[in-house]
Length: 67
Image (cartoon, rainbow, N blue to C red):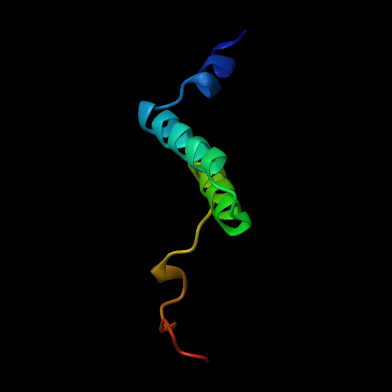
């Protein structure tokens, strides 16, 4: 095992707590829409470097406006 392998295994405690919470919520629900949301949240928590959009990406967009 190399140092690089160990770095990938080193996960912050907050991330582990969030993953455990989401897995418990996923196991407790029977709602397909809730399951989908929990699985997406779990993916985002476990991939902290995933690209996500921010307000800066869409400066002229107004929430609720059709076009």
